[in-house]
Amino acid sequence: MHFVRKASAVWKGTLKQGGGSLKLESGAFEGPYNFVSRFESGNTTNPEELIGAAHAGCFSMFLSAVLTEAGYTPTSIHTTAEVHLVDGPKVSLIELTTEAVVPGLDEKTFLEAADKSKKNCPISLALAAVEIKLNARLVG
Image 1 (tube, rainbow, N blue to C red):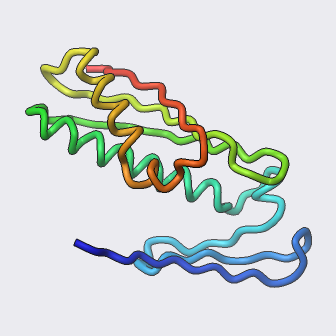
Image 2: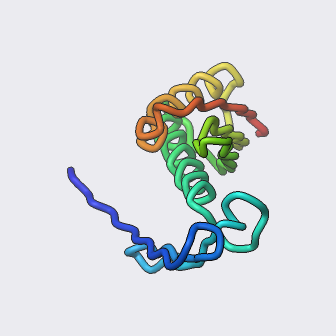
């Protein structure tokens, strides 16, 4: 199995006054980004937000696979990813928070599956240079 996924970016102008757009090959997203949205507080997207979405989605899918393989059927898995951008600039930390509803699953087994997913989902592996923390909670 080998898949190639593509995204593109265009930037015009200087770092602080310029702007750009990001586009996914699938067409599912296309949007603007700029200095303010990345380093201050703006209403357009930024690369870190997109990394967070990718990581949350990958982790949730991987956790579903781990649980299913163990004989459990998840009802829902909700994950958020907080991507910390610090001076440098560099991404210093990603905090994953997940809540799952998995009938018949005990807390210990859930936490083990969540930890395995944090360590092994493809996006976690791709981001191995960044500290990744996990807060996992079985809610049902």
